[in-house]
Length: 553
Image: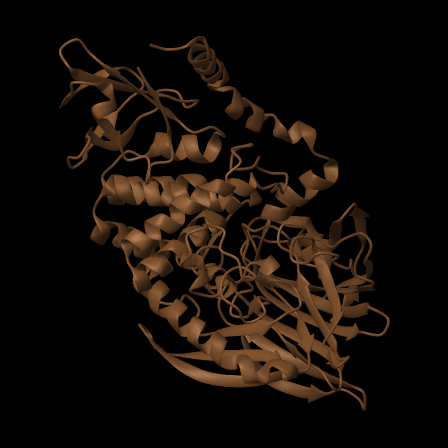
């Protein structure tokens, strides 16, 4: 029988049905104009499609000052004579030129509005140049807060990196700062004092002596790249190169480590190879063969900077030597190499259109850790790792954020998201199909940006299951569904789901204790299952792989 507390709990759940979605719809009211300018796709942003940047910047380390320019090459999506780009207001826009001549511009918070002397016609490929300078925001706890991370190595040499996910790339360089418009290619030219080098995304194509004191490094990015991935890494680096024989042939693999750590390079080599082996198996070929794969040592813990993964885990296994799952499986590999490299597929290859859908990046990449374990240590170890990670879930709010205001959802997008994908695998119950779905996602959305609906529709079609309400409950709601089970007079059991999502349905594996569990589709109304038990305690539910609550009467 249900207790009074159980009835109260069910009443609370039922009262919340539908309210979370309404809260998401009204969330814009809670954000500032600056948030909307950064997060909303207005006509001043959708009127042009970015094709190429040439970012050319000089870093004055002693004064923590930067100065340079960025060339925007775009194609007009429609006729316009005004557009918006983005640069944090603490940095100066010194001038904007169009065809070599200065043009008028105005600023509002971190948005800059450029006025052109004539209408730019739809379909035209054109460009303008932004000259800027200033003291960029210094990150106090990179990569969780964005900006420049100004540090020194043990030898007193400058050791500097940028990290700006979430906060936005416009914290240090001018760009169209919205994830929906990835630039097709890019040249990154960075001048730094002699004695240190700069490492950025893509391939080093030229080194240029500027004067007796500065050298400029030119890095070419051939593949599409999202703005927050563009990075500077300045330090006294030692470079090591090797080739990885991957699915698409030889992949260049480069390591840039501090001179003081060059004898520790084998740790990175081992973890990089094991990571590429596992992820090419599960996700398909590394998405950026043309730009190569790099690990670059940083003072901050790590970031998924495309083709130049930031590494700061101090050459140890686990997450700074710890295993969040408590199972021990997380101590057999370097967390930062695996996790941040996983983002090359989910986050960099497949990029969410809006920060609200950052769960796509983080949920799949959290789950990639389990798939790394699966590839090297087996499925049971993988599932144990996922189950152990549950202890970090808060269920404080949905893992999807509100659209149009540059806001992500709950931090649960990591481990709760990983649990969701393990559940989907369990529901589908066909590992060959599951692998084809993961590889198919990376093929279907190769170098593309996506929304929530793109992912849900693809998984539904390829799996043969309607998992829409499962995604809605675990991504757009904060609570987990409750499986209510009761024994009927004839001994058969009946089940239903109690959930925030209207008409929630999800397959679940259950059966009699000691016998093999069977998958049944359970809905929000009671239905009798072909399972007969003497006592309700004889019912066994796969709560190890399904992240649910149970209510038994």
